[in-house]
Image (cartoon, rainbow, N blue to C red; front, side, top):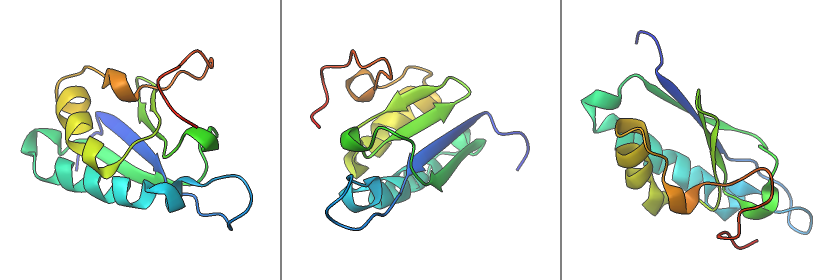
Length: 112
């Protein structure tokens, strides 16, 4: 593969029950797999890297993902969201508004 046009990180952090929530136990692992599959089916997205990672920070709003170089953060992602992220953001260049997370804390659309 040549240069990577975008890089998506999806949190798959696993923590023991009873503490802070973790994206891995809330569907992050499945979201990562679904996003990889959605991208693999599209030859126009073969220059997109998708990497599972540990904690991205906003644990109570996860599963979380971030797309670089734009620095667009997604919260509350589910496997069902993979097609929209691939189609609208990665292919179309428009973030999926319903999933965008504001690090400034002014996002009212996501449940904790």
